[in-house]
Length: 511
Image (cartoon, rainbow, N blue to C red; front, side):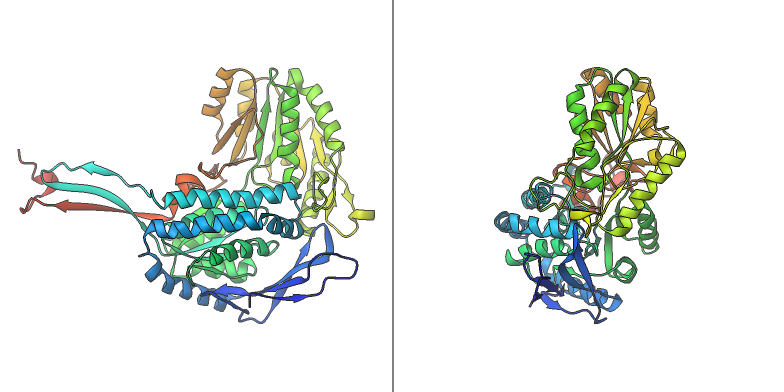
């Protein structure tokens, strides 16, 4: 059985608590450690969402061995047939969208409209990758020699390890798992300990769609006990991490020792530039959504707004006024606009940066306080927080906070704004609000980031384009679109000589 159940606490109307087991070789099994951990609702910690296995190296070894066995057969299944399973999973997810969104809000905290979007992104990723099963294109090129055929084909890598974050617990799992299996790989995934249920729900849909045993295996637990041995395992030939730059350096170093494929999607400190000619109404709404959507807990969050001095005063006043009116609360309430931090540690980090900003001399315009009375007493809530008069070199303008803290920075014009935007260690997402098409295209060229939006905030990626960034945001690989297909395949160049003679390539040109 995948789950057992426990009764919900008195006074809470949620469904009974799920007791989840690891999923290895098509079976739901307890961890070798015999230990478990709790998954609680960050909006109401009385709500126990699930109990999960606190796994160790032995569980990783079992999962990798299962994936290795499954690979021998799965790689030989024609790619269109592999993709049909993914397509069926998309259809299943559509039917379960509301159920899975409700469970995701309980375990992660973000509001229902966002968790519905998270499940929808997994559906979109499934449809996209299902289509790629009939493509997986490679080049066919003319040979330099007569009677010789030349092409390159994609081949699967083998066992792939995935380590996923808590902020998009189904969407990002889908970004990794779906292209990997369509390309013919098998997988071991470690979901974030704060939000494992959503990954289990995704894999359940794939299993119900007919995915063979061992193709995807889930090992729940913590980074040092599960993530590290997964990255170190000799039979894991590719590792994909979405997480902090600090953890990325560790995983990247481990992968380099055995020459594994390694994809790192890491931090961001994303700028939104607002020029004097911008549609301010649009920019304010975009900045609110970008800054406080998902409680600021996105690698693409709009954490810096760089406003030209001609509109700076009006923008700050109106933006702060709107931020103060955002409804904070439990994401299961349809009226809620911003939920809690995912856990106490993240909340304390957010609050510590408020003090850092104050001490640096930035002007606190609103927020900055924890909410812990009345309806907030059992959750990890804080007010939407806005600093103005921020110097670009301040820590609150340089370091990723991953919470509802927005810094507004004045600039002289376009060139100054670009310099400020690029003056950080990250390069994930960026945005520009202007009505000048010339400036828009100049920004597209000059912003040092993997993603640029024009007249839209820094959040809102689509699954059919590459996702990732420059500098400390990652190591150059991309998730989504053809970038994911490139990561999860090896190129093999193939030459067929039908001349019936020995031809020596560049040596024998027939001249």
